[in-house]
Length: 310
Ligand code: KMH
Ligand code: ZN
Image (cartoon, rainbow, N blue to C red):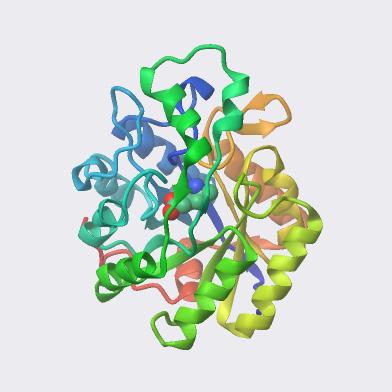
């Protein structure tokens, strides 16, 4: 993998793991998602990874129309690359999950590269009561949750979005997911450069030990050589430790309230921009530069911000 002189910062604005009770700063309504995303772009995020939520209950909403309230505003206000999730919530089926990316035709969409247990029930222990009825069962039911991404599911997402010129943020939660990506690459179903987002610290995926990060990187190096651009996200409290290790190894980074609600130990992040600013300081502190959206487009061979359906 070429060591980029520029570092792409992605920001994942709201996601589908954290629930409203966990932090008052989680963007939920279209206005909150738009404002938070614009703030993150202004702070230096070149790529904005977006989910949608029900504005009343904060529950993940993967309907096409749920994204209409913020996609145009984000596009008009920033030059950032829009990355729409095809992960939705891990409880959803792949056709529901892929629908928004298929319709809105973003430059980038996430693509989850393997099935896995997806346990966010440990979060239950931190909260005595919840604002909304759905939250407790959402977390509790993850004891018996398999986030399904069969080879057929992955191919479905590829076939549904590839024709639109959408390229992918390949979410790899474990070593086997890299081999799954290699399977599709070897058959010419995905084209390089591969934007590999290595996910650390989700219960059900690889851990957060520095050796885990090294192993993910060296396996990707061996499988993809110069054909991939490595990014990492550390879930929860490990977000910035993992980011620091990865940037020092030539990696790109993803932050955002989707993946961690914290800005430092025991202190809630009040905005996504706060985490992006911290990531920028980390990058510049190492003498590297934060990539602009157009530099990210160059590095990832993206189609351009105007060739979308919003
Ligand atoms: N929630 C992240 C750990 C997706 O949206 O497709 C991975 C993710 C998946 O962002
Ligand atoms: Zn996501």
